[in-house]
Length: 488
Image (cartoon, rainbow, N blue to C red; front, side, top):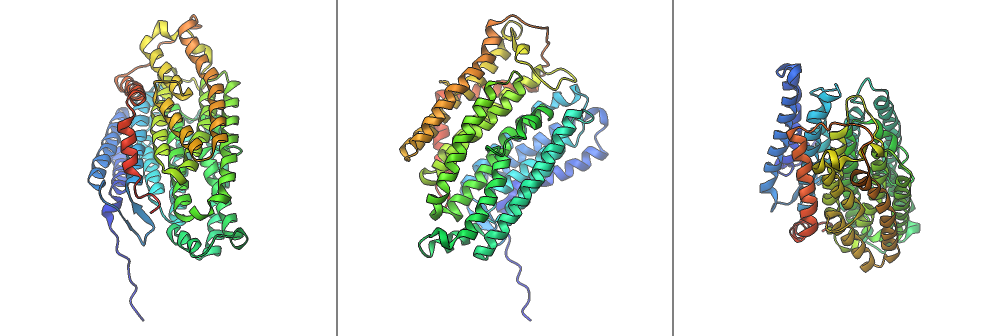
């Protein structure tokens, strides 16, 4: 009997992932046995240090590419750029939580390692080139988010949100497993490159690949749930409203970026020859999501629920960038995700600053007269609202212009038109917040809770949102260099 051959493993290709994971594991022990209960912020600072170290570890890998674990995990500039984005999202979320958790009397040191595990899961998801590894990454991400969603125990709304997310998430995971089974039954493999090679061996005929496309459809259902595409979005308003606000912010950007980045890799690596068959499906999903998300936000008087519906609408815009990316390069996708991450995290950070202990909802009227009480905070929120609406000169305007232009030039002018139309709807509900802040009298006295970290967080996001809108070319150049080898 021949000895079992263990495939070579290059740990350098997963160094950022290993750094985040190992740091989180050690931090759990340090928090439990070393850090006293009254100093749990120290756990947060150590977690921020871990994310910073992981970002530094990733720097020497910029010119490195390759695969490991039997071609199930890949390192390229695409995954590396997204890794830095996830680390940034995790860091901004932790800074929000440093003051939020003790103010709401839910401070537990486990929060920060859980965020790190979620970041690690997102990194693994974008590095995965095998459906089984993608499933493991999705489940790790889901498990951490279930716990984080219910972190505000014993607040009933938080526990209810966690249960809703758990039930829906488990249901979606079943679709993913069944989809993997069908894809494996059709191709005999779960490796994306191998599936793509099989399809490239002869002309693609739908009648000969019904099982494969059925499996791909089931995979899409899971991604649709994670990204909050219509009609898989119904959980979003309730879960975002019940979750601790930093968790809702993290979910609104991190999960979208990771899931759509993985979907983009599937489309460009495994199913590029099936473009004509999945294009209509994704186009309809993008159009309906843009319409339903923005129209749903129009009726909201609760800022947190408005941002939840807004995130559904932006899921449609990001999906449009993915559709365009499969034919024209993924620059629009990466640029949009960076702009959206900064803008949405900044908007949620303002909500965190205004929330008082025990409050889980926010009325639009609570923003009335904010400019008179906190001019700097109102200006920052106005920047974020204008950016989400796509008003120049903000990063959101450049991102939407980038996506809509690429869609029009790619023959998807009708989708670009729907994007423009829904953006016009969105201006109304974003401007409602701005008008209340600047043109209304205060409805009640609210003293914002602004510590140094949260103030830095909001300032950082606001400045970059404006800076990218005024000087977008350095970021455009970076994302172009990030995507040379995607799909090759």
